[in-house]
Length: 224
Image (cartoon, rainbow, N blue to C red):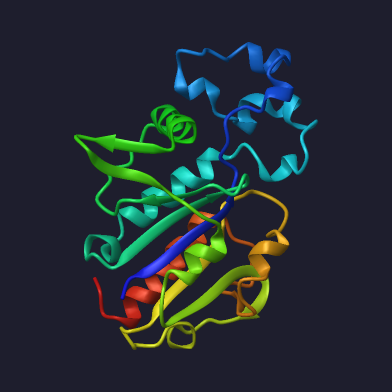
């Protein structure tokens, strides 16, 4: 069974209507340019402070780094990884394991804005990124024989890979990693599992957590 990673509460969204008239937004916004329509804290911070939970929003770079690391891993190349993006607006997208995510950040932003506007990315009728119709609890229910693990610096500390993953290949491990900069998971996320785990004595960036979790899984199942 594959390792299933859900990047949850990702700071991915198009620029909200209530701040589109702010000078920092109007300076960069171009309706013909998908990239300019994505909320980005690096460009729009002065406008974003008016938004609810602004500290968790406008960080497409976190998702970009996580996807580059995960999709380039031996685990994914071996066909044993599935990735879902869950946005702060409760939209869920499934990533085709064979998708080649651009390393250029501006092109990636354009891709994400297009996804959020059109709800899919296709090439020659092949779904590269597709929307999951439903909520997180529906996605979780769609998998049988599963163990759900939420990763948080506040969780129970684990340092040994076999304390995290068993060698039982029939089990679906669903791991939830925060795709945001600051703050904590929503109550909806925490309600999905009581198994809250920390894998470092330090607070790690999301892509470091992704790397370490994948490495633990690869070691457990001798994938290299």
